[in-house]
Structures are given as structure tokens and as C-alpha cells.
Image (cartoon, rainbow, N blue to C red; front, top):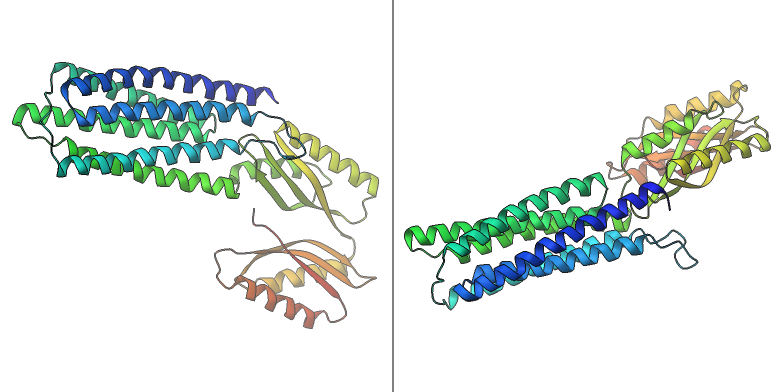
Length: 371
């Protein structure tokens, strides 16, 4: 495990332990004060702080498990547990939000005695608002710095809690000034805001668990590293899978001069793999495409195919050509444009047109991935 990843894990644990301490303090005082003055909203806020303790504990456990070494059952490690943890934490947040709405509606239908809001209640809610807001902003920032979806989810939850505390504080002030009890309606509004935020976090976690597109800037760094080698003419395809933050695994296809010897290609592949590892990226294989750059006929065929591809909106580009004139074989990648609905039909039509243009050749078109 590299040093940066250990520092990241220690940071996640440290800030979540701080969250446990803050929420334990707030839970005890808010529940106690809420019971004493019979304030439904303050009691719910205290229970929410207990759920935050559980969320932080789950995040700490996930960070430990994410460090487990790969094994035969999970050859790519356990890094994605962090995304699963974020999903579980967010579901817990949304459960609290829904529960709060249900219990608040019941309280509106069956009203209880107005709470005896006092100075202690105001002070505890002010403290709660300041602590929750400060901790939420801290976790959002550190979560972004450490690329931790779980920390960002926890920070978002804390900011939602600060909104809830502020709503209760406003309800207390309004009640003391006017005698109007609006705490239930403010609780519902705050809970709806929490649910809305939770949906967006779940969408992000689901994308990462399913395997979404890698950050383009991250890919660009790797591509730039590879094309620095003089032997590399072009990077035709780069497939990366995210197995947790700091765990990128994939493969790359490069174009080289078709006259390169196997030994030269092998050394180039090893250099690329070793340099990628220093960037915390595991390249499992380097695919090679080679075209004889000195053969004008092969270059003419390549240019003609590239020109034909521009007639089809569903094809973004073609690359990684291997043209064997002796055995009449043409092989290359066609990168589809995912924004075009009929891209599959365009690629098939493109294939048929090439058959007519080059009837003596065996043509193999592989689907590339847009980088």
C-alpha cells in the first residue's frame, strides 16, 4: 500500500472520529433538553446525531476494509467498499429524513402541548448549528481533497443537520416572539432538503459502483505519459476501471511502427507499465497496433478509410490501424459517438461500404472507447 493511500486512510479515520465526538456531545444534550421542555424537533435532532455517529463508524470500518490486500476472491482489492459505504450512509440519512417527515405529520395531526422553549434550548441549538455547519464544511472540503465520497456524504449530511438545527432555532425565536408554533413545518422542509441531497449522492455512488467514466484529466495525464516515448505513435485506446480511490486498473492500446521487433515492443510495454505504476495506475496489458509507415499503399488505405468514416455521424474517429497487404487484412478501431442514437446502424453501414471499397480484403472493425 503506497504512502499517499495510507495518509488518505488516516485522514478519513481522523475526521470521522472528530465527527463521532461532536455528535455524541450534541446527541446527549439535545435529547436531554428536548425531553425536559417537551420539544419534539429537538429530540428528533438529537436522534439524528446518533445516526450520524453510526454513519461515521461505518465510514471508519470501510476505510479499514478498503486497505485489505487483494486475494483470489477479489483480485482487484476492496477499494469499492468505500462507495458501498457511502451508499449505506446516504440511505441511512434518507431513512432519518423520511422518518422525521412521518413523525412530524403525525404530530401535526395529533398536536401535543406547546413546548416550553427556554434560554437553554436556544443556546444548545445555536451550538448545534455552529458545530454542524463547521464540521459539514470541513468534511466536504477534506472529502474533496482526499477523494472520499463517504466523507463528502457525511459532510453533506452534517450541513443538512445544520439546516435542521437552524430551522428549529428559527421556530423557537418565532414562538417566543409571536406564540406561533411552526417547528413541525420547518422540520418537514428541512427533511425534504436532506432527501433531495441524498438522491444526488446515491446517484453518484451508483455510477461509481457500476463503473462510470474516469475523470478525463486523469486519463489525459496517463496518455501524455505514454506518448512521451518516441516509439509510441499514438494511444488508440485506454480502458481504466475504478476499484476505489487510488485503485485504477486497466489496459492500453498503442500504435507503433510495424517494423519494430518483438523484443523492442516487449521492453516498451514494460517501461509503460512500470511508469504507470508510479502514478498509482495498474496497466495489466499493452495492446500493439503496427502499420508499415514506409509503405505508401498502406498509408493510402488508412487515409481513405478515415475519410469515409467522416460521412457517418455515429463514428467519432478511427485509429489503431494494422494493414497487412500480403495477406489482405485490414484491422482498426472505430470509436462510436455515444451522443448519436443510431450509432450502431452507422457503424454497420460503414462496414458495408468498406467491403465494397476493398472487396479483396478481410476487414476487422473493433469498437474503440472514447477517451
